[in-house]
Figure 1 (cartoon, helix red, strand yellow):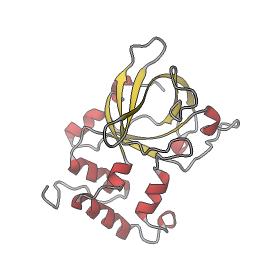
Figure 2 (tube, rainbow, N blue to C red):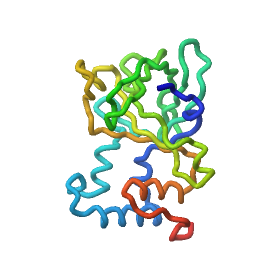
Figure 3 (cartoon, one colour):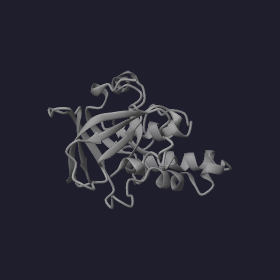
Figure 4 (cartoon, one colour):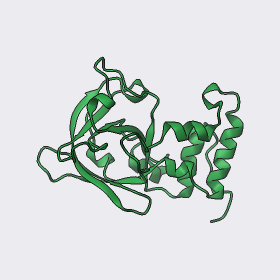
Length: 208
Protein backbone atom coordinates (compact mmCIF):
# COMPACT_ATOMS: atom_id res chain seq x y z
CA UNK A 1 0.00 0.00 0.00
CA UNK A 2 1.83 3.08 -1.26
CA UNK A 3 0.76 6.65 -0.71
CA UNK A 4 0.24 8.30 -4.11
CA UNK A 5 1.10 11.94 -3.42
CA UNK A 6 -0.49 13.27 -6.61
CA UNK A 7 -3.93 12.08 -5.44
CA UNK A 8 -3.63 14.26 -2.32
CA UNK A 9 -2.30 17.49 -3.78
CA UNK A 10 -4.85 20.32 -4.02
CA UNK A 11 -7.85 21.76 -2.21
CA UNK A 12 -10.23 19.67 -0.10
CA UNK A 13 -13.64 20.58 1.38
CA UNK A 14 -14.96 19.24 4.65
CA UNK A 15 -18.11 17.14 4.10
CA UNK A 16 -19.72 19.11 6.93
CA UNK A 17 -20.00 21.96 4.41
CA UNK A 18 -22.40 19.77 2.43
CA UNK A 19 -24.37 18.82 5.54
CA UNK A 20 -24.77 22.45 6.58
CA UNK A 21 -25.42 23.85 3.10
CA UNK A 22 -28.50 26.04 2.59
CA UNK A 23 -28.51 25.62 -1.19
CA UNK A 24 -31.90 24.43 -2.48
CA UNK A 25 -30.35 21.63 -4.55
CA UNK A 26 -28.33 20.26 -1.67
CA UNK A 27 -31.33 20.53 0.67
CA UNK A 28 -33.39 18.55 -1.87
CA UNK A 29 -30.77 15.78 -1.83
CA UNK A 30 -30.87 15.57 1.94
CA UNK A 31 -34.69 15.56 1.98
CA UNK A 32 -34.73 12.68 -0.50
CA UNK A 33 -32.14 10.83 1.58
CA UNK A 34 -34.24 11.31 4.71
CA UNK A 35 -37.25 9.85 2.88
CA UNK A 36 -35.53 6.80 1.43
CA UNK A 37 -33.61 5.93 4.60
CA UNK A 38 -36.60 5.83 6.95
CA UNK A 39 -36.62 2.63 8.98
CA UNK A 40 -32.86 2.05 8.76
CA UNK A 41 -31.64 1.69 12.38
CA UNK A 42 -28.43 3.72 11.94
CA UNK A 43 -30.56 6.64 10.72
CA UNK A 44 -33.19 6.36 13.46
CA UNK A 45 -32.54 9.96 14.57
CA UNK A 46 -32.40 11.22 11.01
CA UNK A 47 -29.89 11.04 8.18
CA UNK A 48 -28.46 14.51 8.74
CA UNK A 49 -28.19 13.99 12.48
CA UNK A 50 -26.26 10.77 11.90
CA UNK A 51 -23.72 12.41 9.59
CA UNK A 52 -23.45 15.53 11.75
CA UNK A 53 -22.43 13.31 14.66
CA UNK A 54 -20.19 11.02 12.61
CA UNK A 55 -18.38 13.60 10.46
CA UNK A 56 -17.79 16.34 12.99
CA UNK A 57 -14.42 18.09 13.09
CA UNK A 58 -15.02 19.87 16.39
CA UNK A 59 -13.51 17.62 19.05
CA UNK A 60 -12.42 17.81 22.68
CA UNK A 61 -9.05 19.03 21.40
CA UNK A 62 -10.18 21.14 18.44
CA UNK A 63 -12.87 23.75 19.07
CA UNK A 64 -13.01 25.19 15.55
CA UNK A 65 -14.92 23.51 12.73
CA UNK A 66 -12.55 22.76 9.87
CA UNK A 67 -13.67 24.13 6.51
CA UNK A 68 -11.05 22.37 4.44
CA UNK A 69 -7.45 21.60 3.60
CA UNK A 70 -4.91 22.77 1.09
CA UNK A 71 -2.32 20.06 0.47
CA UNK A 72 1.03 20.60 -1.17
CA UNK A 73 4.00 18.36 -1.77
CA UNK A 74 6.40 19.06 1.07
CA UNK A 75 9.89 20.41 0.47
CA UNK A 76 10.99 19.54 3.99
CA UNK A 77 13.34 16.66 4.67
CA UNK A 78 11.64 13.43 5.80
CA UNK A 79 8.13 14.76 5.11
CA UNK A 80 5.88 14.08 2.13
CA UNK A 81 2.89 16.41 2.45
CA UNK A 82 2.25 19.91 3.75
CA UNK A 83 -1.31 20.47 4.96
CA UNK A 84 -2.89 23.84 5.60
CA UNK A 85 -5.89 23.53 7.90
CA UNK A 86 -8.28 26.46 7.43
CA UNK A 87 -11.63 27.82 8.57
CA UNK A 88 -14.71 28.98 6.64
CA UNK A 89 -13.30 32.51 6.28
CA UNK A 90 -10.11 31.00 4.83
CA UNK A 91 -8.09 31.75 7.94
CA UNK A 92 -5.28 29.23 8.34
CA UNK A 93 -5.35 27.44 11.69
CA UNK A 94 -2.17 25.38 11.31
CA UNK A 95 0.36 24.47 8.61
CA UNK A 96 2.19 21.20 9.24
CA UNK A 97 4.52 18.93 7.29
CA UNK A 98 3.62 15.26 7.56
CA UNK A 99 5.51 12.03 7.16
CA UNK A 100 4.01 8.60 6.64
CA UNK A 101 4.43 7.06 10.08
CA UNK A 102 2.92 3.63 9.38
CA UNK A 103 0.00 1.68 7.91
CA UNK A 104 -2.87 0.76 10.24
CA UNK A 105 -4.12 -2.52 8.84
CA UNK A 106 -7.65 -2.25 10.21
CA UNK A 107 -8.49 1.42 10.24
CA UNK A 108 -11.68 3.16 9.17
CA UNK A 109 -14.09 0.74 7.47
CA UNK A 110 -11.71 -2.01 8.72
CA UNK A 111 -9.46 -1.25 5.75
CA UNK A 112 -5.75 -0.32 5.68
CA UNK A 113 -5.30 3.35 6.55
CA UNK A 114 -2.36 5.72 6.43
CA UNK A 115 -1.07 7.12 9.70
CA UNK A 116 0.50 10.53 9.09
CA UNK A 117 2.55 12.34 11.72
CA UNK A 118 3.49 16.03 11.75
CA UNK A 119 7.25 16.49 11.97
CA UNK A 120 7.03 20.15 12.92
CA UNK A 121 3.76 20.21 14.81
CA UNK A 122 2.99 22.56 17.65
CA UNK A 123 3.18 20.57 20.88
CA UNK A 124 -0.27 19.40 21.87
CA UNK A 125 -1.86 20.32 18.53
CA UNK A 126 -4.92 18.22 17.66
CA UNK A 127 -3.54 17.95 14.12
CA UNK A 128 -0.31 16.15 15.07
CA UNK A 129 -1.57 12.75 13.90
CA UNK A 130 -3.88 11.98 11.00
CA UNK A 131 -5.43 8.58 10.30
CA UNK A 132 -6.77 8.54 6.74
CA UNK A 133 -8.10 6.27 4.06
CA UNK A 134 -6.67 6.64 0.55
CA UNK A 135 -8.60 9.20 -1.55
CA UNK A 136 -11.05 7.52 -3.90
CA UNK A 137 -11.87 7.49 -6.74
CA UNK A 138 -8.88 9.01 -8.53
CA UNK A 139 -9.14 12.80 -8.70
CA UNK A 140 -9.08 12.69 -12.51
CA UNK A 141 -12.25 10.55 -12.63
CA UNK A 142 -14.44 13.64 -12.20
CA UNK A 143 -13.43 14.73 -15.71
CA UNK A 144 -14.86 11.46 -17.03
CA UNK A 145 -18.19 11.75 -15.25
CA UNK A 146 -17.15 9.97 -12.07
CA UNK A 147 -17.66 10.98 -8.45
CA UNK A 148 -15.57 13.54 -6.63
CA UNK A 149 -12.56 12.05 -4.91
CA UNK A 150 -13.11 11.81 -1.15
CA UNK A 151 -11.85 10.02 1.95
CA UNK A 152 -12.51 9.52 5.66
CA UNK A 153 -10.03 10.60 8.31
CA UNK A 154 -9.44 11.24 12.00
CA UNK A 155 -6.98 13.51 13.78
CA UNK A 156 -5.57 13.92 17.29
CA UNK A 157 -2.66 15.22 19.34
CA UNK A 158 -1.35 11.75 20.15
CA UNK A 159 -1.45 8.30 18.63
CA UNK A 160 -3.28 6.68 21.55
CA UNK A 161 -6.28 8.95 20.92
CA UNK A 162 -6.65 7.31 17.48
CA UNK A 163 -5.33 3.76 17.84
CA UNK A 164 -5.38 1.64 21.00
CA UNK A 165 -2.59 -0.67 22.14
CA UNK A 166 -4.44 -3.65 20.65
CA UNK A 167 -4.49 -1.99 17.22
CA UNK A 168 -8.20 -1.16 17.31
CA UNK A 169 -9.51 2.34 16.66
CA UNK A 170 -10.25 4.44 19.72
CA UNK A 171 -13.31 5.95 17.98
CA UNK A 172 -14.38 3.56 15.20
CA UNK A 173 -17.60 5.47 14.40
CA UNK A 174 -15.92 8.82 13.76
CA UNK A 175 -15.85 9.46 9.99
CA UNK A 176 -14.63 13.00 9.39
CA UNK A 177 -14.55 13.34 5.60
CA UNK A 178 -12.81 15.44 2.96
CA UNK A 179 -14.07 15.87 -0.61
CA UNK A 180 -12.09 17.24 -3.51
CA UNK A 181 -12.75 20.94 -4.10
CA UNK A 182 -12.37 20.39 -7.84
CA UNK A 183 -16.07 19.78 -8.40
CA UNK A 184 -19.07 22.07 -8.83
CA UNK A 185 -22.37 22.01 -6.95
CA UNK A 186 -23.83 19.24 -9.13
CA UNK A 187 -20.89 16.99 -8.37
CA UNK A 188 -21.15 17.82 -4.68
CA UNK A 189 -24.84 16.91 -4.70
CA UNK A 190 -24.00 13.60 -6.35
CA UNK A 191 -21.67 12.72 -3.48
CA UNK A 192 -24.62 13.03 -1.08
CA UNK A 193 -26.81 11.08 -3.47
CA UNK A 194 -24.26 8.28 -3.94
CA UNK A 195 -23.81 8.03 -0.18
CA UNK A 196 -27.50 7.12 0.13
CA UNK A 197 -27.72 5.14 -3.13
CA UNK A 198 -29.90 7.72 -4.81
CA UNK A 199 -29.87 8.05 -8.63
CA UNK A 200 -27.19 10.36 -9.94
CA UNK A 201 -28.33 13.75 -11.17
CA UNK A 202 -27.40 14.90 -14.67
CA UNK A 203 -28.30 18.47 -13.80
CA UNK A 204 -29.39 20.58 -10.87
CA UNK A 205 -33.13 20.84 -10.26
CA UNK A 206 -32.91 24.47 -9.14
CA UNK A 207 -31.07 27.13 -11.11
CA UNK A 208 -28.25 28.90 -9.33
